[in-house]
Image 1: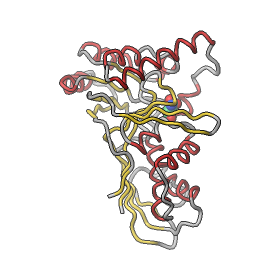
Image 2: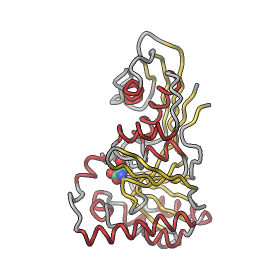
Image 3: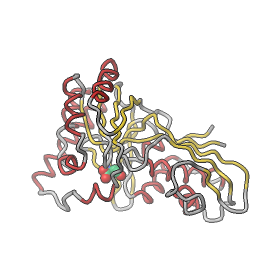
Length: 287
Ligand code: HSE
């Protein structure tokens, strides 16, 4: 059995903690034979445990504590701590592992409730489960979500070579937003979502780049942001935004400009790598 989970790009401008899209980088978990104790084989670095301390196994055991141990192989091309939902993908895989090994028959909404409780917000775990574009709220321990197609466009991701921990990136946010600013920020988010749902990428892009919830506080943490946004602007991109908590910078563009945007970003010689990604429409699945 193999569990596959896509990468995710959260926030998409003003959709802070509530909007995300599944993208074409993947975590795969191959479930091998039963064993005396859990063993996760991987080449993702020495800091990632291979026993039940691994987030995959601790998540699965949090869902069902009496699962019988197995040997597993974990592979991922979702870089760690880069704003592409690497830990959410592991949490979603862990829930699916418990679902399969424990015969739990969880619905996608069940998985989302558990994943959100573990992760703390739904914007990465929801698209990792459902695929596509997901808008979700998590208030008073209750999750509500809507899934829809992302309007047809290209995604160019610039992924810096350094990590940015979500906790550090959340640390620069204010603890409060004045009422008037919150109303303005919410109106921008409403337009962004309405435009995405109606397929108007030009208006969506304008709203995405007008975020007042988080990007203005975080941009100084990602020194490449302005240069990448300038490439987007010069090439007629719809929007450039900070993916999740960063440091990945995402450019939304008409498909025909994606290759040019990637090569212009590459020509800047920044410390990082760029990729052209597409929307994953499946979310977590087995093969
Ligand atoms: N919405 C989250 C944030 C995503 O921006 O902090 C990263 O977990």
